[in-house]
Image 1 (cartoon, one colour):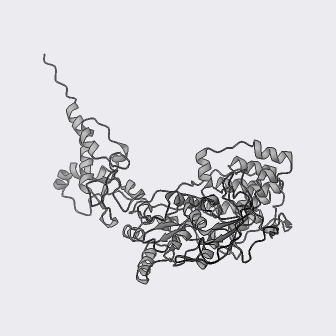
Image 2 (image 1 turned 120 degrees about the vertical axis):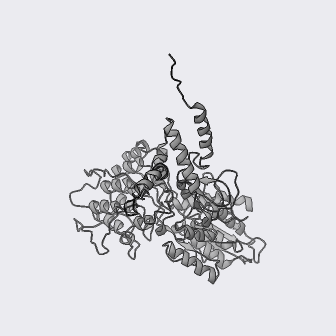
Image 3 (image 1 turned 45 degrees about the horizontal axis):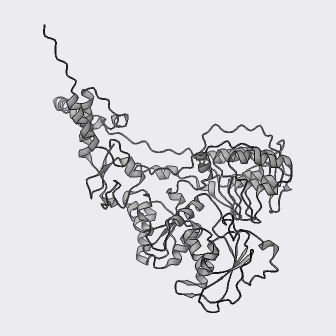
Length: 581
């Protein structure tokens, strides 16, 4: 009796596997799902991969083909072929990847049911709609009324520190942090920068936008979250954070809600803020204090333990160069600083320190176009309106996040953008963003200039994202002599100093009689740097008119040429002065 021959289709499966390798996306190296082509080369990519980093040039390694945004289009032929190929593999017993199953519905039904459709002769009204609908991203944020009041349970206020603020503890709560508050079960918001959404999801940005009242500030720069933290209203603090309030917002003096809760010893509010992503390492403009400095100097041991366990830097220096350890006066406080275990992983620490997130959300973008002509400025303004960005400005300020420059002809704009941590990109970025209807990644549109240093760009942006003090914070500058460099006049230098975190002096400092208030240290001076305790710098133009004959090289006062100042900006780092003397 003849035994039926069994077929395993091994050769067919091998051929299918080879073809499938050709259909992989060069970015994720997996089968391309909903493939898109860029128009200038043969490569195609998953739509999700293209959405995360698109624009400028082809994303495939080794391919330098141009990839204008307007040429990106869905490759339906590859999509249909991929689905058909895997359908054949499924018939032969091969497993279909989960990421492809949903995408295979439309083409497979079109192929396998076309004969049935012709026989049944369905009318258009009876045909099933097999196209997958995209679910819009829905925000849980709800509006907070602009006139909403935050009641205080205690009318008695007390002065906690030198700042002109009164702290109102809630009746019945322990100022030492013995509150029985239970941390919220809501997952803490991620601080990582989110990938760009699909261009088909047109409701993404409108739904992500938070109520304007949440970030509305009074004349002191305080938001509703500041007010609730100052009043000790933990319920309102939690409510505002659940609605999307920024836990790292700062007022005009640089105080964050975490500063306010820490100086009042409100462990319950400190815990809430930390659970919702508040950074414990923000420095206030006044005295360069961190929340940990506030808690230590006012004797709140439980708050100190909580801050340290969430990554507060015990080596952070205030404007006088004092760390929280040097401010502590009791053994219990020193023990809390040095022996409290860290309850966070390295990745959590990294996320905790990021205070600016979703950098490509429209509400976070502040555009400056200092070099644009009137015609180009109108085009940029129209593109910004289409993308629902705030109106661009010609002025470059500390609020600028993206500076549009098409040339490095005026290097002063580069210096200014570096000081404030703004992205320096070409105007093509906003034009391509308008073409796609979504803000694209800036990587392919960075201004290329011999004046720019990549490491300096990275440090500048990182400083902004982590809310750290400006580059020259803690220094006092005095300009002496003439500054006749064509692209950097004395007025230009004064503007740069105003953006740098330093203070500009009108009178030459007396090395033997410096005001007590001016005896500060530079925040960004590296360990063992000769600038470690320098508070005053006299800037001059080397070889310029009236170059000073007497030049100081003291620990607290130095006379340094202008080139040092400009190179520090480009490197975003306090360089050793001896390299330029």
